[in-house]
Image (cartoon, rainbow over all chains, first blue to last red; front, side, top):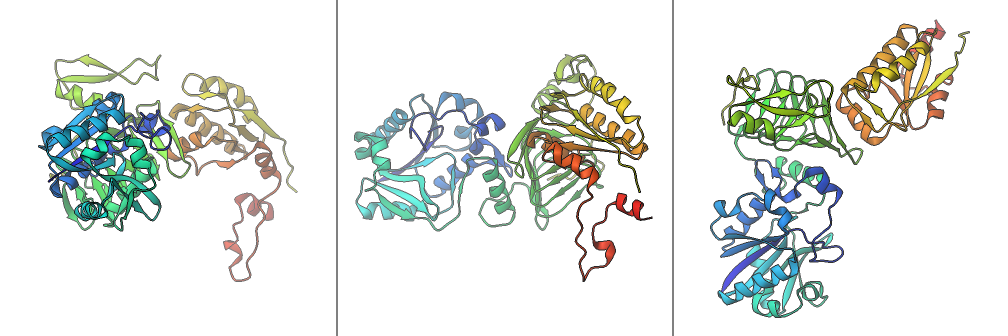
Length: 356
Length: 134
């Protein structure tokens, strides 16, 4: 008897169920699905896979639309036993995976939506399903049904998957542990606040240099910057003088928080540079986009001195190139890459670097 | 008794940045040269504002304050409000949901309820009220 997992991405659970989901405002804001976004040093999809491998599953297959291929972290490198399958027909992809599982001797499989994070005893859920003697068991919590099932691979691959999973006759298993549905940036913030507050088992990366303050490898925090617990500063981040990071804020990898800026109850997602003397409050910042949780709206910042994405800057410094601002006539075009024989470091090193 | 000046409502253009901003400032600046210029900037059309645009708003406010006037913002969209907050100017301007409310705010000082338990200075009097009283 073996156990497998299928992590499903890009399914429109509300409407056409396993059909590919339409682009939503959230997708436009983040340019990548929330489970692929780094949270406290690692993406949620990696954390989910790790949980399943810890529960002794043999194989995990990630099924999603081809448009997601570019934003998925390299799972196969990190987990032996992880596979990815990019298909335009999600339902057919899941059915084919179940058939393959069945042929290779895997009797049961978990099916989980990629945007669901659950902390529960997965083996208990599996044993419950086996004793219930049903085709499928669906997990539920106090807010309702969750997109997490256990199915018999052989029988499920022969039946209509959508009918099977939405069938009212499937067994229900109540989850008492931590559950977070990652549907919009608010959920991301709630997860980070819960993780920093110790309300779930998501642990920030790096070292806890003081109670509640985690600093990851290569981060540089100026001695005049202030970090109020709990907070997380990711890999290769720079927090410059007089910056203030407070109230459960997180700064993901390769970010820069410039002079005098306040990050309060906010998350700065990877590769984001925040300019000088700004207030980022109750928000999620990603590249040049800012989603205000207080107002429920997103704003795109065209001025690169205020907010910008660091992806280009990182690649340029890696390849000995220097970024130069474009001419004043076209201020909305942020940067162009230009060859420079003597590359200058874009960032000044902090006065008091903390090496994680 | 302090003489009340008329309140001028100006519509802020759709884009307020380094390109569009100076034209807007040139339009507003003659009005700011009056004695006690009371201005409401109707931001209902404003869709894009950057740091240069915000600098122009601050410049207008500075000019108005020099002559004992004020600039208030009305109908600021949530997205623009996010940018004002980000750049720390949301606390500098008085903001109102509608232009009517903003115009009214120049003539009617905020109603202050004086608590029996709190001292008078904790009642929230504005600076303008203190000036009139003296």
